[in-house]
Length: 364
Image 1 (cartoon, one colour):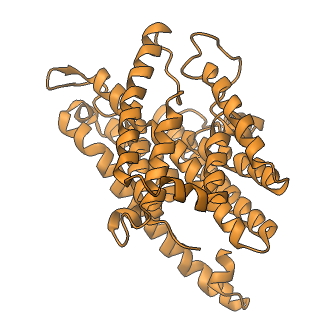
Image 2: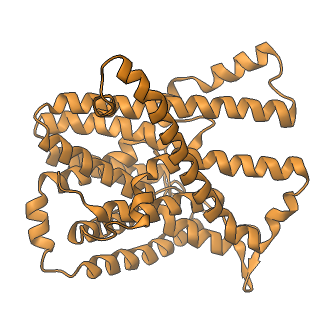
C-alpha cells in the first residue's frame, strides 16, 4: 500500500494541537496587553481540527488496508484487538496513577474499601462507551473502536454512502450536546463515536474507497488552495465558537459545524500532496502520534503534581512557563514512547523466538 507521508506530517501538527488544548497555555496570564482567556480561547479553537483529523485519517488508512487485504475480516479483528489493548492498558495505567496521586497528595483512597469504591466508580459501562475516567483523553480510543466497528459493518454491507448520510445527520444533531447546547440541550454526552467520530471516520473511508475519483477531481487544484481554504474555515470557526459562547452564555463544545469543512479541506491537502514531509523528523513524530496522544496527559498531570508538592506552583504563572510547557510535554511524550517501544521489542523478541514466532507475525 502506497504511503501518504502528508498524513503523518499533518498528524504532527494535530498532536501538537491536542497538547495545546490539554495544557491550556496563556489561560491565566496577560500577554502583550491581551487577556490570556482570549489567547487560550483562540489557540484552543484553532486546535480543534486535531481529533476529527485523527478520526478521518484512521478511517482512510483502515479502509485502504482493508481494500488491499484479501482477508479483511482478519485485519479488522487484529485492528480492533490492537486498539482495545491500547485502550485497556493505558486506562489501567491512568487508573493506578490517579489512585497513587490521591494517596500521596490528598491522603484519600488509603483504605481497602475506599480503593475498591474508586475502582468500581471508574470501571463501568460509560468507560467502554465514552472512555470516561482518569485518562480523559482516552475517550478518543473508545470512540474510534466503536466507529471502526460500525464502519466495517456498513462497508461489509456495501452501504458506505448511507453511513455518510446517517453520520452527518447524527453529527449535526450532536451539536446540540456540544457548541449549540445553549439552544437545545441534549440530556446525554455527544462527544462519542456515534455523534462525533463516526462522520469523520466514514469520510476517511469514502476517500479511500473513491481515491482515484477524488484525486482526479482535486488534481487540477493546487495543494496550497486546500490549505488556504482550511485556514479560512479555521478563522471562521473561531468566529462561530465566539458567537455561540456569546449567545449561549459560555457554552463551549468540543466540535462545531465548521469543523467539517476545516478537516475536509485539510485532508484534501494531504491527498493532493502525498510526498509532503517525506523523510522528515516531523513525519516520523507524526507517525507515532497515537503514542504521544496516550502518554502526554500523564506528563501534564505529573508536572503539575511535582510543582505543587515542591512549592514551585507559582512558576506556572510565568509567561516563560506558558511558552515552554507544551513543547516540553511533546518532547517528553515522544522520547518516552519511543523508549517504551524499544523496551517492548526487547521483551517481545526473545519471547516470540522461543515460541518460533517472528516479530512481524506478532505485530500483525
